[in-house]
Length: 141
Image 1 (cartoon, rainbow, N blue to C red):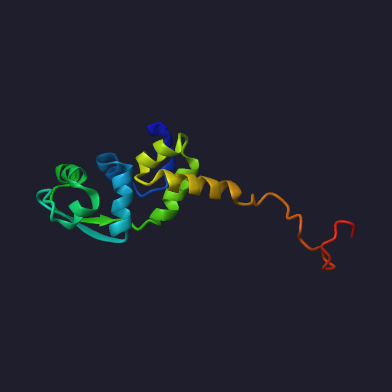
Image 2: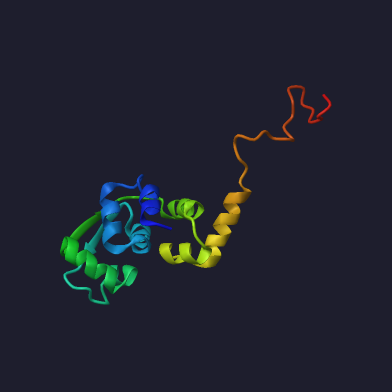
C-alpha cells in the first residue's frame, strides 16, 4: 500500500486533518479523531506521560505535534472515524496484517470488515425475490 493510495483515500478529509496525518501518521490521526473529533484538544508544552493527549496518542506522536504546532489548543474536525476506518480497510490493498498495522487496528478487524464488505449486496443487482406489481414473487408470473 503506497502513500499515493492513502493520499487518494484521504482526499475527502479536511485539509487540517490531512496535514496532521502527515505529521503523526494515519493510526495516530484516527485515534485523535476518535478521542477529540468535533472539539478541541490541548497540545501540552512537553510530551509528559500524564497528559491526556499523550495517553491517547503516545509520546512520539505528541512530540511531533508539539514540534509542528507548539503547545496550545487544537481544533479537531469531526469525522466518523469508525466509518472511515471501514472505508479505508475495504479499499486499501495489502494483507490484513499490513493494513491493520497501518491503521492501528487488529488483523481480525480487517478480516471482518473485508468479509462484511464482500457480503454487501451491490445496489446495481436486481433482487431475485422482489415481488412484482401483483404481489406474487413467482418468476413465472
